[in-house]
Image (cartoon, rainbow over all chains, first blue to last red; front, top):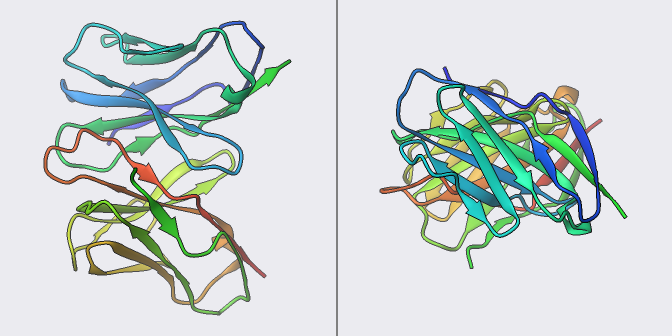
Length: 114
Length: 114
């Protein structure tokens, strides 16, 4: 079974600085999807960014980008120019290309310091 | 915009009570999911459904059942609530065919069992 590991339960960053959240996963499959989801305090979880494993190019969405290292099974999220609104729980998730549910990591709580 | 609505944001129940958590989505999504979220444990899949009247067990189905009589509604049932079921419950939905993995979440139902 696939597993997703987030080794940083909590992190903090100064406003306007850059922070990187780590995620590793374990799979024997060659094609799959990886995701970062954001859960702001008392609000709905939303998708931040998605990466298809067959794409070598790292996904980017405005201030959010990933460093996808397929051989190392690593999928980190970089947040540039951090803002107070980035404070949230961030979950890394994996999904096979077969229609199976997402597998989530345990999450990283990010605090942004003004 | 996709809207996933969970009927109750906060519930307090007694041990042994039967508890219903309702979830409705308005985007004609085929797939629906129930996750449980606990600090330090991340999101764990309880049950999911890929179609009306279909259900599949997730990773932690014990003590729970589900019902999907209509496409837009997916109910989670605790037949006899116990204190270890105190948790945040998240409902999510997604497309079916061609699903690339994006989940749309409700705001969550925080259940306390006394």
